[in-house]
Amino acid sequence: MKKVLKQVLGVDVAQGELVVTLGRMFDDLRVDLYAHKVFRNTEKGILTLLDWVNKLTDPEVKVRFVMEATGVYHQKFAFYLYAQNYEVSIVLPNKISNYMRTLENKTITDKSCSEAIAQFGLERNLDRWHKPKKTYRSLQQLTRERDQIVMERVMVKNQLHAEQAEAEPNERSVARLNERMRLLNKQEKEIKSDLTEIINSDRILKSEITNICSIPGIGELTATIVLAETNGFELIRNKKQLTSYAGLDVKEKLSGTSVKGKPSISKKGNRHLRKAMYLPALSAVKYDESFRNLYVRIVSRQGIKMKGLVAVQRKLLEMIYVIYKSKNEYQKDYTDLKRSSALSHKDQYATQTGS
Image (cartoon, rainbow, N blue to C red):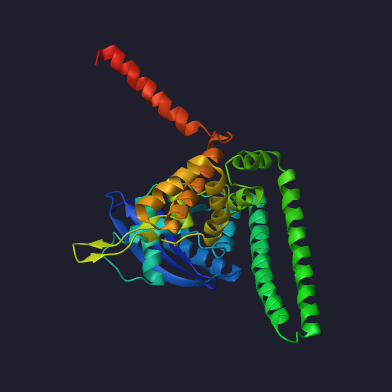
């Protein structure tokens, strides 16, 4: 009888349900996806799921629970598993979608997604997930609340402008709109105060944000949003993963000579990250020479201003990641130093070889 080397439960998480597939790998490296079921995404549903898993798996081999990072819907399940000391791995959605393109089954359903996640977990050596710091969760909740308030305030401003532009504005309507504006401004001020209090109470976090803010165009709010939306880059292993997670990666459709789509960013990622990088990119282009040169180079080649701005957004986001990992402040002349160092080594080599 073949020995089981690895057991994985692939979970496709939705708001109301958990679609799961059980898989195992044998000592001859054969993969077997052998059980499938749907459970409610509630505490009772989770307990029923765990009982089902225990009955169908080998008690000698630990089960790894693998799921996508799907907004907030996966958190309840992941947090419960973590508290009970189960092995959990959380994977970026773009990793699963890219993996699914390599499979024979091209039909996308909840079941096929859970099967792909289970197979991915069996074939890959995934890191064990750890519950994120409460600080990052609080920051994310507050920054997203602020974003909602800002959007609502824009709507109220437009309504107020339209009302005041009428020949005979309704005074009571104008008064109510002004009252809503004052309330929204007050709430935004309270959120900013809460954010400042959290940041100042964590010495390490404050140092990280200070370093990130040394990058041209990046302010404290942007740095906070990036750290909050990535949980301190918890699932990010490189810059390419980060740009893909933000939806700032370039997609291009090519098929022979007959089909050719225009390259564009995928937008299949965290919209909060993309939105946070827009205004900093405008500021960086205006006030920093290196970012302005990048922008001009892209626009002169492509002829589209937005492409140049997206390139700057992507560069800024990657730089935040590098600064966070290096624990150092931004060096404006870093690129020039790197280039001069490379030229110096080249000259030294030429001298040594006599070329």
